[in-house]
Length: 184
Image (cartoon, rainbow, N blue to C red; front, top):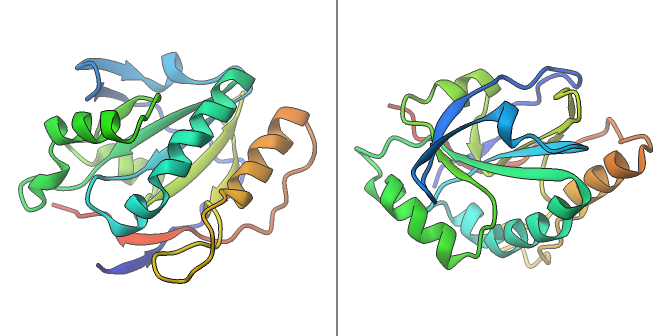
């Protein structure tokens, strides 16, 4: 696994739109129809990355805790499935079911969406406000596979709660870290 940090794009950046197939129901979906009333969390993940596997239960719990509060969660996999067949769309659907993901798990076959977001790793997180302006880009928390830190989602939960409560979100944001996106 190639350990890669996320690219820290400027806060205020507008979320690039997309229209991708949701592997959980095989229907194309756009950002404009999936966005939340108070915010939107876009997560670049994949099936096989040890960093994503390490936090998968927290990703599922985040959605359960925040979708009802107006922040929708969207997962996107942009990995090259020719060289990484374990990330293929049919296995994405199985992974979503196995991990109890209640959010769309979209397939970015062309990798254009990952490039538009300047995504670099899995997991990579982008939290946008109700105007689809970036308010948080960074790590889930300090936990990594093998470092014995508990998975809490602390950093992203603080940002999501601040967004809901309309309180300031710290601009001191640590990059996410994980496997590099598998580019074609």
